[in-house]
Image (cartoon, rainbow, N blue to C red; front, side, top):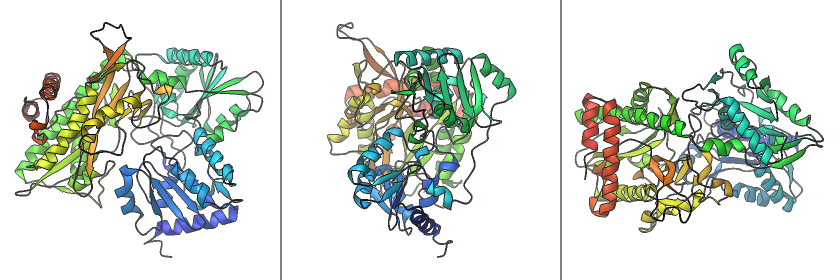
Amino acid sequence: MDTRTSPTRLRIHQLQEALAQAGVHALLVPSSDPHLSEYLPERWQGRRWLSGFTGSMATLVVTLDRAALFADSRYWVQAEAELAGTGIELVKIPSGNSSLHVDWLASEVPAGQAVAVDGQVLGLAAANALRQALDAAGVALRTDIDVLDAIWPERPALPTQPVYEHRAPQAPLPRAAKLAAVREGMARAGATHHFVSTVDDIAWITNLRGSDVSFNPVFLAHLLIAADAATLFIGDGKVDAALQKALAADGLRLAPYAAAAPALAALGSGDVLLVDPKRVTFGLREQVGADARVVEAINPSTLLKSRKSAAEAAFVRDAMAEDGAAMCEFYAWFESALAAGVERITELTIDEKLSAARAQRSGFVGLSFNTIAGFNANGAMPHYHATAESHAVIELKPGEGGLLLIDSGGQYLGGTTDITRVWPIGTVNPAMKRDCTLVLKGTMALSRARFPRGTLSPMLDAMARAPLWEQGIEFGHGTGHGVGYFLNVHEGPQSISKAIPDPNMAMEPGMITSIEPGVYRPSLWGVRIENLVLNVPAATPENDAFGEFLEFETLTLCPIDTRCIDRSLLRDDEAAWLNGYHATVRARLAPLVAGAALAWLNTRTEAI
């Protein structure tokens, strides 16, 4: 077999041989690591290494005679292209939360055979669902072997980048206060100990940041909190002596990364351990001492960090202004360069220039995700990423128009940003304008909503979809995700989506969430308009007679291009909202820009 033309086929074949030698019929390869992270260190990019599919979310299943990749609609076009010629079939699933691969395994693996999965990267809740389905089918589950490790000769090691402190004033709540708040949550659950594996929770609790993965400023570690002490399990050399001393002053000692499992095993009679079944792996849960009692509940820190304080919200507003100013600088250059027609501009150029503009802003640390710049058909792939081998040139053609979708964001010491805008290239046609206007109507409908405090976030999803549903249009991704504070760009527990609600998804003051409906027309164009919003108290005519209400403060500051809008499709109150938003954008950003950027801002924020 020629590995130069088919390395994926060779790897799948080698894996199938390893499965046969191990006596198992199938291997499940999730997009996961021991911390159930979204962005994975290279060591746990096994699904990508095996399949060649580079999307951020998917599940690979390899049996002795088949291989299948399970991906949702955000990745279908990308997956079909990247899997071509590999022999791996694409199984299209309705959403990223689908468990179709579980049903597929239960039906495809013969009774009496076994399915293997690395228990160290399999979530506890996912493991329970998988075991239940396989037990019903008479199929065994093996979580004690890492079959992939046997065929990956140059598997990357753990990252070694140093950890640093997120300091005041941008970190207004001290580490000791956060530990105290988490311990209050432990006490309410009746726990003496609490084990945390999710890296964003650990970064928030400890006021530490790192660069062990792309985009999210986090580091690999586990954390075990007791009533009067805490242990951070982290790689050697990642914390310098001065920071170790500061951590020790807050009762936080260090231990080797690999010592987490033995520490769990050492828990015994009288110890009550709190773990979050959605945020800890099956492999680590299995290490807990047999005599210890386990309480399963959401990590207290997940709820605490989702509710930004007034001080944090103030810093986020500043970060949004810096981000908006960077976009003014970029878009002023972009429109001028495009009109001049001298410089060759591609989707890669956009990423390069926009990232450079952000890098000039105060407090900027890095990007919050891979910039998505998709021209025309490429914009129809929600998670498209241009590469040197495959990208589009942005060009004005006589008599033709197009849409350029740009989804981008930055990490600042005072917040995390995520914004999507669509820009006209040439003269856009009426169908493009209609799609842009319908998406804008969806963004506005939810942005203007008021709702009782405690409303479960998925209940709000239909508000953004309603203007699209009226026209028989749907989009396959969620409407909104939570956003961290100089942390993960995708954060729970809230999710404005079709997810089945649970009580932890209640909307509370201080939560930051995206609003991003879209329309995607394969091979033509894509439209998405995304702002971040903050939950704030709402004054109501009934003066709280029916309880406390919340509304959204729009945080994102960047014009929405009115050249893409069909004014006849907007009600007067919708046009008034857009004009009011643009007035705010102009007032907030004008002091931060000058020259061509200021002129561009003034032009793009004119009232309609």
